[in-house]
Image (cartoon, rainbow, N blue to C red):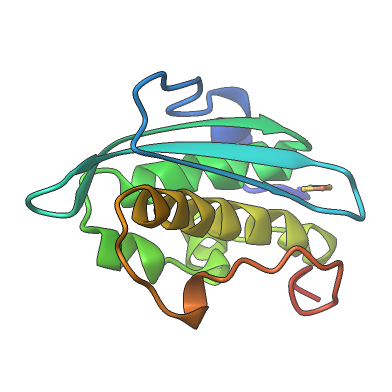
Length: 145
Ligand code: FES
C-alpha cells in the first residue's frame, strides 16, 4: 500500500478544516512546482503565547491535506515555541510515512505553520529571527528534495 492508514484517515477525514474569521495569524504558502496552496489560521492566547485554535484550507493533493491536518493536530494547544520547532519530518513520522516523491507536500505544512506565526508576530510587533523568513523560491531544499 502506497499510503499508510493514518495518511488515508487524515486525507479522508481532515481535522480542523475551514476558515477562521477572527484569526490572530494567517499564513499562506504555495509550492511553485505543483501549484498547491495551503492557508493556515491560528488563534493565540497572548498571555501564554499558546495556540488555542487552528484551522486550515489546502488547495492541493491528498498528501498536502493529510499533512496539514496532522500538523494542526500537533500544534493545537501548544506554545508557539513548540509549534515553530515542528518539522515536516515529525509530521511525516506521525503519519507513519509518506512516499518519497510526496515529502515535498509535508514541507508546505511546516511552512504554513511558520507563516501563520510570522503573521501573528508582524501584527503584534513581536520580533523574530531568520528561522521565520519563509522561503518562497522553488529551490530543492524547500521542496524537501
Ligand atoms: Fe503539491 Fe502535494 S503535490 S503539495
